[in-house]
Length: 462
Image 1 (cartoon, rainbow, N blue to C red):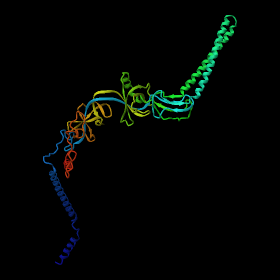
Image 2 (image 1 turned 45 degrees about the vertical axis):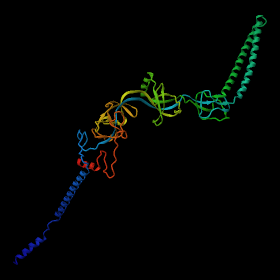
Image 3 (image 1 turned 180 degrees about the vertical axis):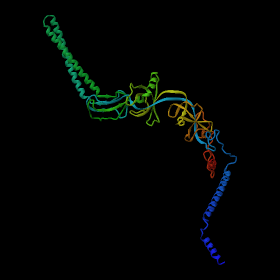
Image 4 (image 1 turned 90 degrees about the horizontal axis):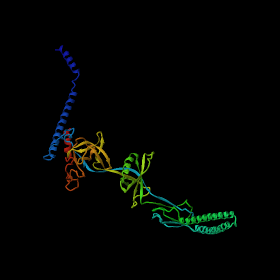
């Protein structure tokens, strides 16, 4: 027993000094598994509770929405919301072909009134801004100096006329004596020359008299044309020099013209209509191009194209009875060249451009759209002529096109115009207005379902 005791003690010592068994990782794995199991149980309880809540909130009789007839790729994904859109019908109508250019109101006559003689301004016969007719009195220049000159020249004329008469009588006497051989031929010829000289003097005196009479006429200034007088540029009592001082400006307003330009590419179309004898209508719009000011007729086309701008000038005449057009006013001129009759018209809001080219979203039934490529023609800024791709009676999407695609489900809302409208517009007789949810009711989405139902369907789809 004593001999074996050291061995047993050594063995026990070796056993005690050996490495301990690693138990810590095992405990960690056990705790992690328990946490995962708890999370799975909580997740399952939450899913069951959510399904139960959705089932309680879902109205009785509501069924799940089936996918579109074309499958997810065409008719829409299962449960996809319908996009709210506005539509308009394709109608048949007349489309005017309008050419637009920038223009300026140009009076047919703008006259600067200046005195043709020098003198003091003694009278003014107009008010600033007054409408005057041709021949109306405007101003008076002091006529007394010209009246005095007229009297002087008339006296010279009378004296020279007397001398002429005397020289003619002497010529007759000389001619009688010459026939009796009592005087030489030289004396007769000299007297005849004196008669010619006196006749010239009388003619010069008569011209001076006529000139002074004309100056007296110029002393009274009258309106040369019918129009509106502007602001007075000289005051009463001022000395006016002939041809150098503007008294006032008279501008003709009725009728009046608009000179505008068109690109050289449009000249051939316009000239063809002019040669046919057509009376082309021109409408003048304001600077913002929103309000029509007046309507007139094309009068003439310039005889050459401006090489610096590549445009040609045209003149349109306007009666302007209401004086809506004002001289030098900037306007936008619209020339109606011709009218396309019974054309298919599509609203410009429905026209899109992209990979298919020019296209529209065409209503395929009442709840789906399809992409339809089209070819377009003339436009008036609101509607466009459809050359191919659409026919009168078709309905196209005009509002809400940003999220559409081929075969997308839609629901028509908003106002619809035209004889081909699918139903009454909102607010019209017979229209159904959207109801307002009661207080505390679940919020509704665009398709009429509650927000909770919409989130649930999205989770199921995922």
